[in-house]
Image 1: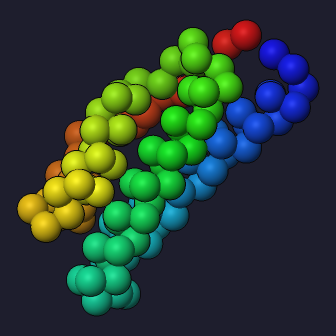
Image 2: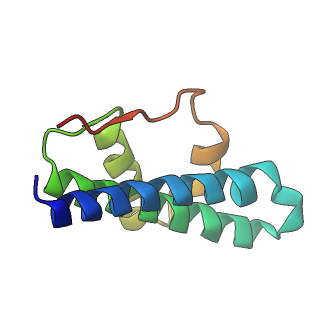
Length: 106
């Protein structure tokens, strides 16, 4: 992998982690700080950023191992395309207690 590609890969993985941390902090742990609509927008945007950043990381390193990657993509697509049927906040609040594992061997 070229140094520039590695730099971009690390940036995308960092973007995904940062968005996940923000989502955890503001969208789940402190919902009383925000009106429901604000929390809903935070959840939608967080999932959108995580999905896009991981998609870009996968483009750079196709063999990267990210658990539940296609579930992450599917969740983002469901929110984007079925926005009137899906409550992204319920996806966050009802998620499994497993976390995505990223392994960027190479």
